[in-house]
Image 1 (cartoon, protein in one colour):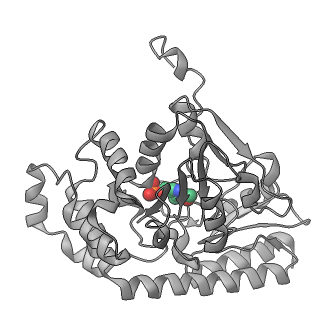
Image 2 (cartoon, protein in one colour):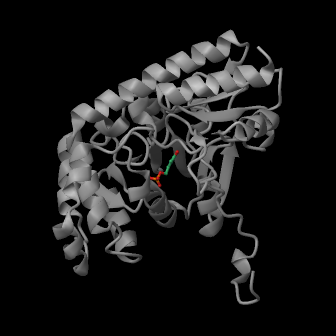
Image 3 (spheres, helix red, strand yellow):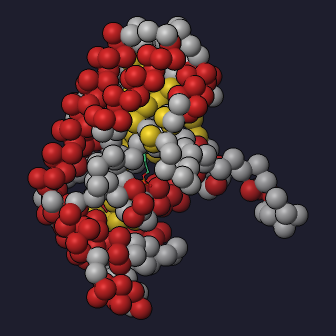
Length: 351
Ligand SMILES: *Cc1c(COP(=O)(O)O)cnc(C)c1O
């Protein structure tokens, strides 16, 4: 750090993403990317003509992409904002609704804490239950902005819409953000509740279920008043926040429902098979509705398993946080990748 850095940023602890190795020698199951290619409609959409158009700024209103999302979820255009990844949407949310403080689970997406620190927002981290679940009763009348990832990051634990409604009913005087990065792998979206709850913001991304992590596109669905707030922040930061090519890729992807459903179903089926295999090897697995699972065993520590798998060419994610340090987090890959993973695990634990 230089001597010029703002004092308040001196203690910043930036988000640490999973490794992105430069060579392709690893089976990469560490950052919850989709193992399947983007929709062929996305791939075919980028041609010379689109690249020529890059001399012009992108549409500051991302009209075509927002229209496609609005059609998909059967909501109005003014209920949608798009961002440079959902991380950017979350940043807008912290800027807009951080003043009253925020509250989120102790084990969840690491970026919430990072944004809170960046924006000088006070936060409470509410412990998950002993079986790694979110208890919505812990968030009654929070009087702060509530942020819940559903399914939860790091655990895959899922709250039903009934539980989400309970949360909303108990927090009418503050904003409730449901981060649905993983909702398409077996959960039910809270988007259908936005007309009923003016304080609800649902955040989603094209990075996981739609195979576009590198395009950086996310969005939020909420009442038009909340979206107007977020637009004011966006237009004070970067009006052209989604580039032309990414907007086009995402628009084509969300229109290709058939391919999307097929991929999600494949990942759900592979997840089930991986969980069964791990359990038969004596592993404990947190029930997951995401495209990853958290698992641990008495036979080997989380850190050692992570290192031994890496040595054998399989990258998974290890977190040193006290409550989850015995676990590894494994992204659901293709069936072929999963077979190799299982074989390597058997080798490591000597089965
Ligand atoms: C992956 C992830 C995001 C970030 O998604 P991007 O759209 O790639 O920025 C947000 N929230 C959660 C819980 C995630 O797991």
